Image 1 (cartoon, rainbow, N blue to C red):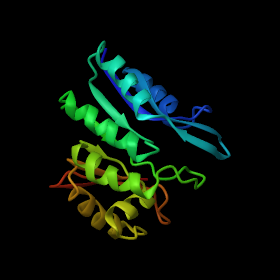
Image 2: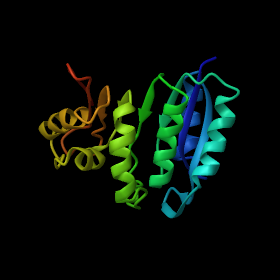
Image 3: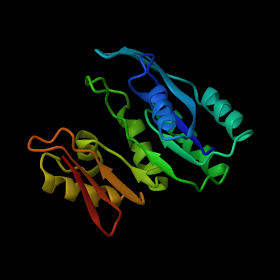
Image 4: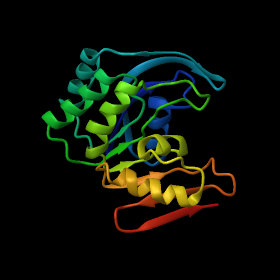
Length: 197
């Protein structure tokens, strides 16, 4: 069985983060494992508090998993702090990880709580985005990463090209919050693919 590793925050309600990722992995027949970057107190109504773990605890978790398992892919979600973001990148570079890395650049919660400070954001753009196989920003995150206000489908195309220029192999902008229709846009550097309903 393939092993997928999520590196993300812990939402005790299971609606996001490590627990949601593991449920998704399982539904696709993949064995899921999780590294916790931050512990939150949240539920379906919102995030009450978020507390990033120390880089030392993060690295110990990663070392334990990679000493025992052959990880086929990694999904990175909420990082919480610059120190955690830098530690993840350094660890993956040190072990020479060359398998797929999916980066979900979590900046805020669905309820609007800030989950990544500006310093950590700059580190993520500089360090993590270039090593991603696929980056999956929503419209707000795509606006921040591309520095283009993403409000229309045309803006999505412009932002996808700008984000691809930051180094990832492919960009998937999730457009569920568009006014006219729900459309996700995938750009691999050569072609665009629309997934709409």
